[in-house]
Length: 228
Image (cartoon, rainbow, N blue to C red):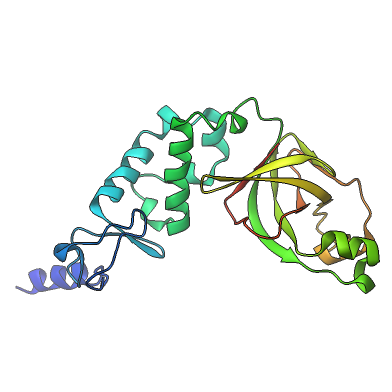
């Protein structure tokens, strides 16, 4: 009896309460009776969201077959490629959506820029907006850089330089932009120091980590790709 009770408690500690009327955070379908409450047996959970049984099975299929539809370069560089059937529930809801959007783009033939033909791409680790003042960067640059989107990451392939036309993939939504400035993270100076000094080669080469200033106000998030 003691062992049975122990197993019940251990199983019960993994339960997550899902309120009645909740919807799948992927497809928006209303979760049924057996998918809500403490005994949400038909609901699967990722960090920050709940998935219906259909979306859960769909994502598992994508991960199981990733070697069939992910190019070799995508498998080597995409953070989503690191998830397996054993650990994928540790991914965030945003990553789950990115995985589904990635497969949809593959099916539509829209991912050639991420394959061997890409001249350059960077995976975004951090993204933020800046509004520098004239005192900090001068009148002309303050106007040019006002509400600029800054992305920080490592260049996985090729090189990005000031003036380059780039494209950002945000969960299947493609955004066009230009690189206004580029700074390598030298480990000694902060981003603010680089921007104020406005010095350097104004480019990021393969295997270098640093910042790209893009002429976008918003719309870039960690996990997105910047491609050229």
